[in-house]
Image (cartoon, rainbow, N blue to C red):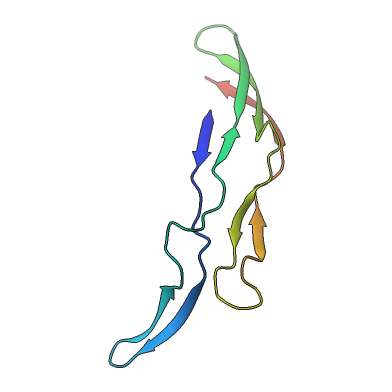
Length: 104
């Protein structure tokens, strides 16, 4: 499976108090001016099934997630100030999963 995560907005924001409405967050730059990179994530699954008698099947599965081990930022601070664009989270590293399924 291939997944494309589109870029996130990285423009700075500021909380502004509006009388009668409350506090709202506003972008300080043009919304399309700053964006993070697009990310391509590729996951694969290999599986092999074996039939046992009538209606019974054993399947072994091997999954690999993020096979190219990309690690772009997935979340960062957009609030204006000294923490602007601090990285909060990155994409999880490559991971493997083994599994067995028995159907009857």
